[in-house]
Length: 451
Image: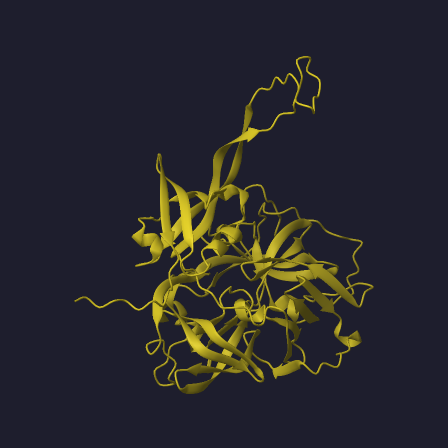
């Protein structure tokens, strides 16, 4: 049912000075042929600055989404939206559909690219929030709405996206590039590749998903021979979608191939069927090609011509590593932290004294709010579980470094270290502070059979 109301959500700014000759619902670059936008790369995910109705926000660039979705809304945000319509969205996950509002005629600005009439979905469910997983504020996701209007170049090494007007873009000769045909379903791009499972080389059709930090997802199908059963694997938390948490098997496959590009010993997830039952309805889809692989290329997306161009970058030969600790961390709120403050050296008269003669100092402290990194999952039979760590434990320090001095991705990177590396944690559990020590293990270490 459609209805009209005003919602205080963001400040609505009507820009009368903007030229409304642009096509409705399209991005344009007024007076420019191209634009370059810096992005943050957090856990393989691209986070872009996006302005909506005059308010500066941060969005994930996600080729797996059609219309932009806004979430992580706080009481300090305010926007007036008219002609709102209630709808229900479904994504990956083990839960049900999510209630959302659809709003039209929103002003979007990304770099110098503007869209004066962008449709937008707004989700109020506070459980849908990527900020805890990434450790920085993220307010939404955007994909097709941006890609459809430009030829988009992504450079993962320099952390730059280039938006190019199609009519003025010229492809440069590139002997080391490969070009692939794209197909689309619900405005989402798919590409064909090959996977090597055991002795079998199988063709696969994969969603290109820049919004997933994994390398490769495959949907198990015994009829096609796509299964994790013949490989070493472990059960794990795979992530969170619009419809809830996703669990499944993590494994490695011998090889993944895109024409002449071949990657070996590739991290591969096989999500539980309950989380992907709606995704599997798409004819011939076998899984997703995600950011841990995509970051190994310089990429050109050309949606209108339905083609994708890839060139190896410096990440191409990087080892595929798993979290060897069994800990999944998120940022949940803040902790009050007491820090010592280094005072200036003063003499007995209160003068600055760099020679430290007759020093009189008073030690002082300051108290501030710092990010709190909380364990939300502990993998069964992992080093973390064997060491006694529990969900809800709050990380204070790791290997002698205060957790709040590190970014979330810096902490999780420690858990992907070499087999045998010692991890020393100080954690807070209720009113107790506990020291924990364990060694990182090979996640595919074969279990010893009982005598």
